Image 1 (cartoon, rainbow, N blue to C red):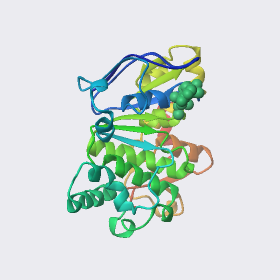
Image 2: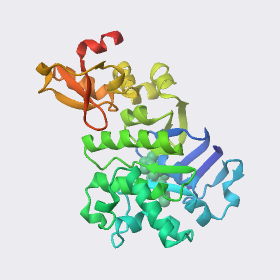
Image 3: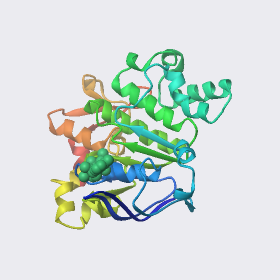
Length: 311
Ligand SMILES: Nc1ncnc2c1ncn2[C@@H]1O[C@H](COP(=O)(O)OP(=O)(O)O)[C@@H](O)[C@H]1O
Ligand SMILES: [Mg+2]
């Protein structure tokens, strides 16, 4: 568990963080969200002491982070940034093995681990391991960034707008991947975004910030149903009922079974993709969608009437 008590950060006149209290339970994914400049990145970096707070206390599993050597602390916490931040002169496999290398793992062990992590993020190690970062797409580089952050099996993962620079379709895939990986590895994840739909899709809890302070800290459903104030309501925006659908997968709404041959030309969507984006496609004029499993096999179909229960 991570516990932040009365965290302040001042830069001369600027108050970047103002008495932040936050408790992040073990194994949960907490999203920090809020307008640009509200202190999200500062708060994230206080956790691994890339930024030293001006005041307050950081407890990680009961230990005061300010008593831990910051270099060791940073190695024990995974960190993923927007541009992946891969070392251009290292191969993909070497990039993933960086922290195990620093921790003194043997070469065989760290390269094995790198391959295991590449497979976890669904990059074939035989195909990608010896390539260099510039030979990968932006989305693939982000996957490598996640593999690298997980390589030394940290208990905590910090992610600062990791999917902000990729196209919307890749972004949805990366969100799905992260949810799947999180089911497997159960890390305590702090994830920064400025996208409310991403926050709703991913967060066990959402922490909405403004001017360096926490405005509301709640699970997505509570925040959507009971926004703390006008600022929160405005930040959530229109149609909170539709936004709630982002918590569900399309598989939750589909009619299972082999789709009829007449549907053969319909667009295909993954079972674990968001119900919200499936509904958008249906409202956009697709009459049905074929739902496929991870291997691409059709497992059902969905049309607008399947969402009628929501009305
Ligand atoms: N090194 C710095 N020196 C001065 N002000 C800073 C510095 N880093 C961040 N700030 C200020 O602190 C505030 C919070 O920044 P940041 O945490 O990066 O916001 P966010 O990630 O939410 O966009 C902003 O007003 C920013 O300008
Ligand atoms: Mg930021």
